Image 1 (cartoon, rainbow, N blue to C red):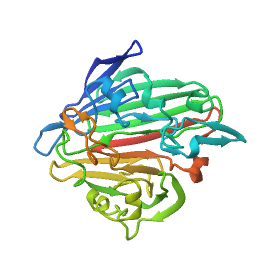
Image 2 (image 1 turned 120 degrees about the horizontal axis):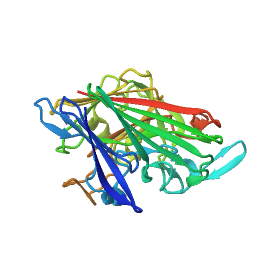
Image 3 (image 1 turned 90 degrees about the horizontal axis):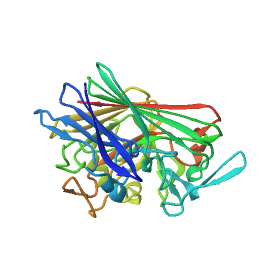
Image 4 (image 1 turned 30 degrees about the vertical axis):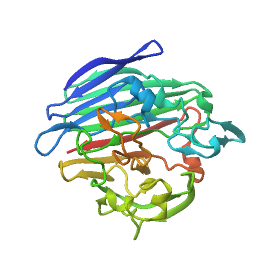
Length: 343
């Protein structure tokens, strides 16, 4: 395992480190301290061509100016919080309104927008990149001093394991995820419309016009949301299902996973031969098809466009009806793990 460290850029007078890990299979993983962001994952195709399979930029300023959460860790709360407020034990906490009247992904100064501390452990068969950040009490409106650790473990078997840990000195809410946009075609040669997705999920959460879960759980049977046997992403996007219309033509929905820690998610690009399998101990994944991506910026020389990447955000199900699952008691250790296996 080869590890290199560089300076990706400077923000507020502080240098932002970037780490690149290479294994013996031609795979390369790069991440940086700003937002815990995964900036590149280079993967061979069936012919051995090594290309990048995630959306990202080459400069820190582009992430600040344009990034729709490319590759970063989301926190303290993934997804939308209705009316940008919540209540714990009778006390109301108000958050930033950065998505209409709602709070999105922890607010404008959430975990995606801070510089994390980092250390590395370089072992024979794997490298651990350990990021840590202490979110102060009432940062972005959330109670408690929350100490967070995110570990990216990349190994010789083309596996990337993300381990999240957090502990607070007050009762609070925590729901962390990674917001990487995947495109297995390599170097953004094509959109994700022909990607084939397989999801071990029997039901998804209905969304309202504000993209908030209504509380209704809808079985996937007989709908374009049925990915249990695998289907092309385009089949759902091109449908006239009211739930794909409401999110801008595509998917942006929480799927409830029917299994844990056993390759619940599989993504395949037939043309390149690349395949990604994901297993997690989380009960849900938000499947987002880049419906909001516009053409107002470029990504490493490629014009951004709708459906250029897709996200598979493993997490607790968002929404008021699932709020109790987001609560973390004082001194309780929050943990979560998601593994990405590349073929």
